[in-house]
Length: 160
Image 1 (cartoon, rainbow, N blue to C red):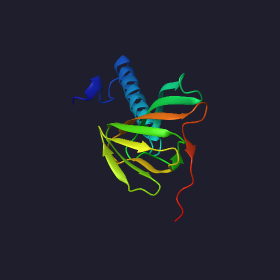
Image 2: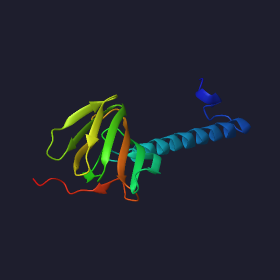
Image 3: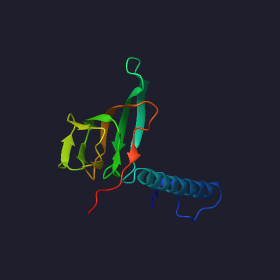
């Protein structure tokens, strides 16, 4: 009988049996490690978790008290952000995938790669989510805001 990885049927003794056991243990450990890493990756990309990367945060010399920020945001499949506001002018440009965006009082829009969205300082961003449950979405954000202030802060959901 031929078995994978040079395994024997267990009838033999000595070094061959020890090698077989060692290979089986190694294979089991590799499988366990693969399953653990895969589950960690899924947990790390749970819906709602956005990966934000700051690219530029620059105070403007000719406009005292103002700052220009540039970030990228990537939503995993099904990912989203809770209602929030920016207290800034915010330009959004979709780099890949598709997004659903809505500011309070406006219609929900779906944007795909190459399309843009504008938020004004008084806007409450009610919906910001990946439109897909199977593919990630990534977008570029450029914001003009008061220097030293956070780019994003929480906002209460709209009353029902």
